[in-house]
Amino acid sequence: MEYSIDYQYMPKNASRPHDDGAVVGIKANSESGLVILPNVGDFVHIDNSADGGERVSFSGEVRSRAFFYTRTSNGKVFCSVNIVVAESDVNWGTLIKE
Image (cartoon, rainbow, N blue to C red; front, side):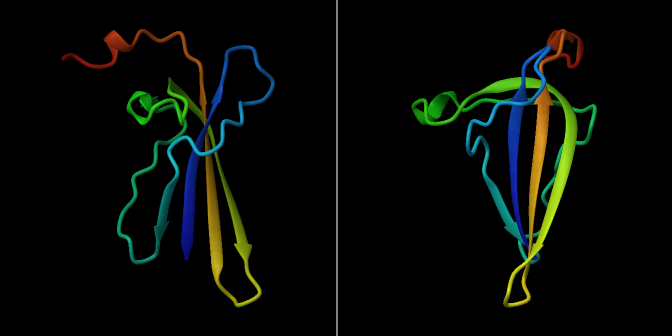
């Protein structure tokens, strides 16, 4: 099976998340090994500042994970995972001690 995993940001009081294209763009398959995905309630920080503005950066709490499975005409199965990260009022300084 092949997997595509990406993220969308949802600002506070928004009814739908932003569609910013490939934010992280993780690709994997059954042979790739373990890919760790955040669960609902986990906090995520995505820093794309070093890519020259090609991708957005954001932080927040995982609101939802959606899995879309598609079987192609040649019998392969493809899974697209969408993770929505919602704006959060949580003070990140209280989450970890550096």
